[in-house]
Image (cartoon, rainbow, N blue to C red; front, top):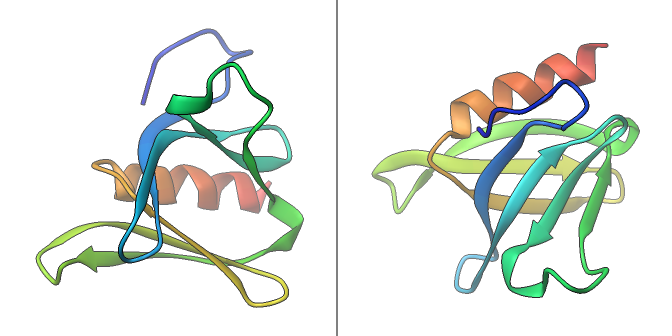
Length: 101
């Protein structure tokens, strides 16, 4: 997680993953949504927005059955977004805290 002023949302380096392909970027815990911003598209408007109000569950999972570096965010309409990151436990705790506010 990057340190910054209180106005900067917590950011985590992560990969959006579909089981085969991955897209590198940053996950941010915004005021009312999780944001994923791809690092290779910095000059575009491309981003994934998952509103907190639509999140149904947040779970860690094992990557290749070895390390717990995966985060699965399940939201309404059976949408699932998988992220691979080194700080999966820290991100999950921070997100669950945001969801409890």
